[in-house]
Image 1 (cartoon, helix red, strand yellow):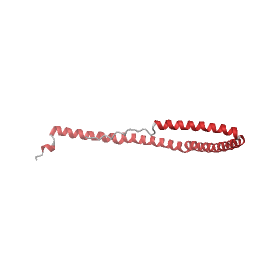
Image 2 (cartoon, rainbow, N blue to C red):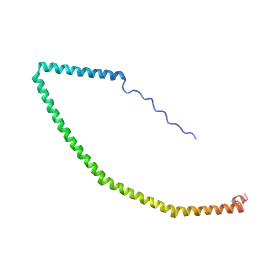
Image 3 (cartoon, one colour):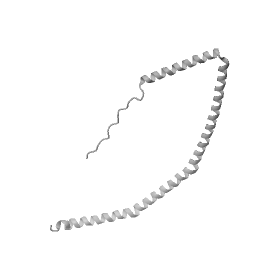
Image 4 (cartoon, rainbow, N blue to C red):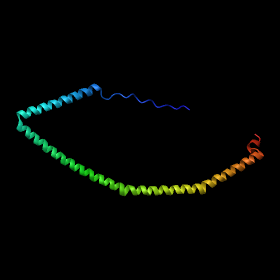
Length: 146
């Protein structure tokens, strides 16, 4: 019996080299420092314009929080509907399934005790009688001339 083994999984290659990750982190830190320096310079030279930009960002954050609030309310409604579905639709189906499994188990036990066991006993008696006859009189197939 020759069973072929599946080929070994290919060696896992590194997705992103470590040097690229280090370079990316350095670039992000430099951009953050440059942004901070730019904000300080703009605050000292154009304070009125910077206040207007700040106000625009505050309004944008307020709108974003309103949108997130609406989204959270929708998600809460969907979660409530899911709980109701599980409680009132799926739970009765599972209970009916358990009842069906119980019925099938009972039927299987009934068939096993009332059909299969007697058939097995009868077959064993027939085989026992056949072997007894063979041991007393020999195998009739071997006694026939070729």
